[in-house]
Length: 155
Image 1 (cartoon, rainbow, N blue to C red):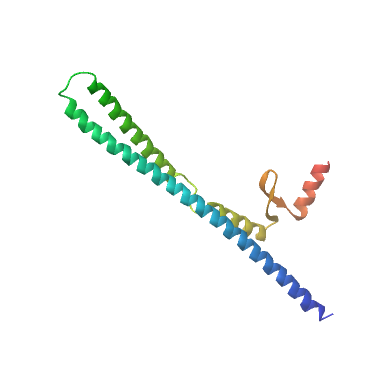
Image 2: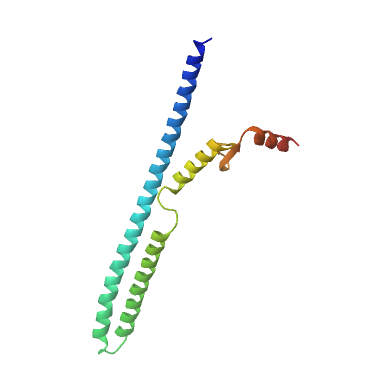
C-alpha cells in the first residue's frame, strides 16, 4: 500500500504541474495576441498622425498662397480659400481621430490581467476556470452551485 501512494502522489503532482504549464501557455498566448493588437493600434494612430501632418503642411502652403492671392481678383481667391479650409479641416479631423485612438481605454494586457484574476478567484472559490462555449466565455459553477443550476434547469 505504501508503494502505491508515492506513485499516486507522483501522478497527481505531474497532472497538477501539467495543468499549471498549460494555463501558463494559454496566458502567454493571450498576452502575445494583446501585444500584437496594441502594436497595430499604435501603428494606425501613427499613420493617421502622419496623414494629418501632410494635410497640415499642404494647408499651410495653401494659406500662404491665399495671402499672396489677396491682391488678385476673381474666383481664384474663393477656390483657394475653399481648398485651404478643406485641407486644414481634414488635418484637424485626422489629428482628433489619432488622439482618440491613443487615448482609448484598454491598456496593455488588460485581458490577460482579467484572466489571471479569474484564475486566482477560481483557485480561491467555487468557480471553475473559464471555458469557451457557444455564447462566449462564462465561469462554470462547481460543487453545490452546479447541483443547484442543474436542478433549476430540470425544474
